[in-house]
Length: 144
Ligand SMILES: [Zn+2]
Ligand SMILES: [Zn+2]
Image (tube, rainbow, N blue to C red):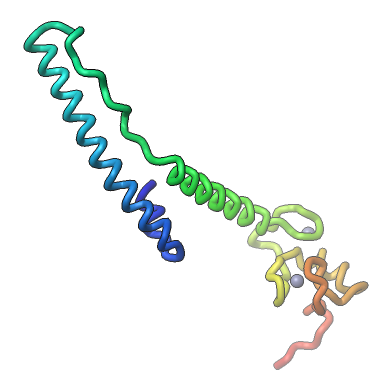
């Protein structure tokens, strides 16, 4: 989880925060395990559980760090959703199979079934998504 945040190239501040948090976490974790070990040792020696020192709070990341972490997770989830919807035809919303003919808009990169786009383009001559000029390649003579 920290690796992912550290390797984000575009957010230097988060990178520093992550490194800082990680160091803090490691330090607290070390203290914590040392104290637990110490307690266990004491209990073994004295056979008295009532003597042990109260435990520190278990190590955890700060709220700010966790917020950033969840924000990044959300972004990734959204990206995944976008990827999924990109495999659907923008016109009929049915998933496009790789063996089907598709047409991609030069401007917005939305992809549709060739046959869905053809029906639309015969009437509108524009992309059904961004409405910029687009022609049915089937209707155009080959360029070469
Ligand atoms: Zn379609
Ligand atoms: Zn478009």
